[in-house]
Image (cartoon, rainbow, N blue to C red):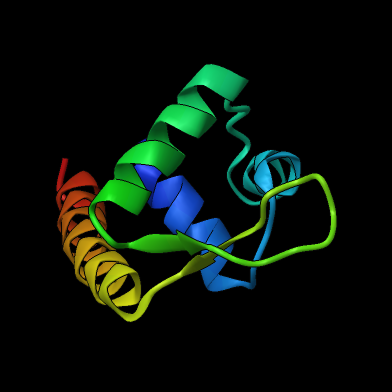
Length: 95
């Protein structure tokens, strides 16, 4: 999985995070290292779609949280990916 939006949503499903914490978390669970431009581009798109929202903070870093709509979107996308993975693995067994 290398779609930055799905990676950001997956990271935020585990709790609120600011950008650097997301980059570290994403690298830890996926092995993908998102550059700042890619990460913040995805954050902007996700916020515009209402799938994440900024969280108030006293820190200079801006944390984000996944919204209900974001959780629903992520759940649907992961279910689709799961179907593809299962079909691919079945087909590899027969190859």
